[in-house]
Length: 106
Image (cartoon, rainbow, N blue to C red):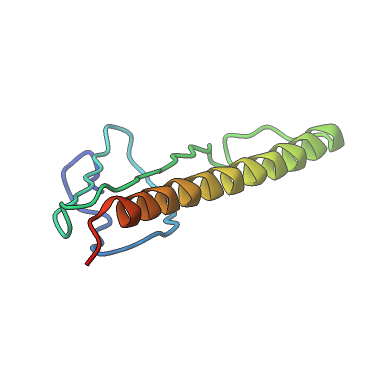
């Protein structure tokens, strides 16, 4: 991942999965690069999510109702992320088994 000035702020290779959290202090376009260089024979599934949140200084004071709604929203977001995670795992497993059974026997 590169910041708007082109500086690399995160780099990894051979990662199967992971969660990465970044706090950024400059606006602009960030660049992401995903590579299939390690194994071009098999397909890959890439899923990523960008969650942009304002700083605490920007938020006005919240009422009890606002706090409750925020907790509900956060809980629903976690459920949604978990569903997406399992959907991705299901897709990866499908591709694995499909490639296993479609290859000629040894």
